[in-house]
Image (tube, rainbow, N blue to C red; front, side, top):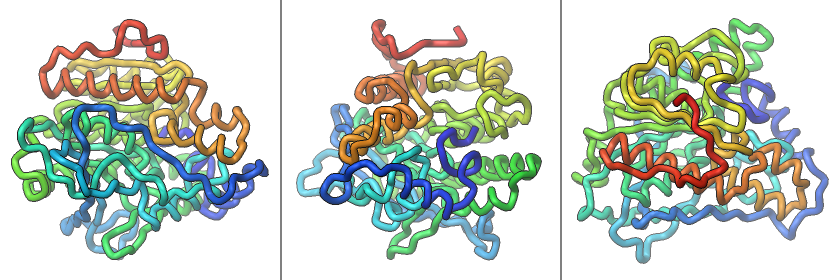
Length: 409
């Protein structure tokens, strides 16, 4: 489904209800002041630079706010930097984004208002000069899960940039919890209210799920058209626009594969635990997307949480059977849906700071050790894109990786 956690479309039907849920979830003793969080270092040989930009699609009225005759988006570009000296580390979330995330999020039994979301710094340095000597670099686009901000994929995106990729992180405005634009204006999600209007009519809910993906795919295709202009202006000739891949989490993974189906500019795609049908549960049958019903003729990767594979996710099975190109599948033992986001690193820190029980950690990110989950996710994505976009004979995961189980072979 589009998201398996506690907010948006499947479990939380209104912003107010979500806010109450996160504020009353735990009476655990607090640390002095809000909890502050850190993110894992990227791990690759390159330091990482970043720049954030506003894009405006004047050819399309906003599908969520129909009175607005254009669609505006925010992106962050991560790239291999030559030198980061004197360049500040970029925040994970700007203040308006942090406030929106605290109010409406997908955290289960976590008092989000007791975390200083705006304090987290990434390992990407603002406006650092690009490393032009070792390019050109393949380009990867990233789409987050339903309701999630683009910043919740920072660990994986910064990791890929540190390995020699230009990574473009895309926010889907009015879908993401909150998007902050230059000048400080913040636009918050409309999806809880949209779900309220659709519930309990299953036909209307499926129509909302389809609209959500359709909007995301249109955002992606607009972004693909803007990349030559934007990347040339910001990074010169270092991005290689003949080698574009895309990946995403949950609805973002669905978006990556559907956009790949609809647009041949995407040469390879990876889906992190996102179904490819307009359903509310991973195991539901029917209501296939066109990518699942017709398949792909280019390489793709499916990575599922514990239990998600071709035998349990009907839309994945259909996609696999109907595809003609190279395909790879992997299940991560002990993983939960949020394991593929920054929550894998954040939830244990929040639990320690607020005295939350072990069951809250497990409910959000499963039983897999966070450092192992992050290592395996980074390696499998880097190996896949190295092989499919760079033509390298990448080794892939080490033979002794008990957390990972291949499927579909």
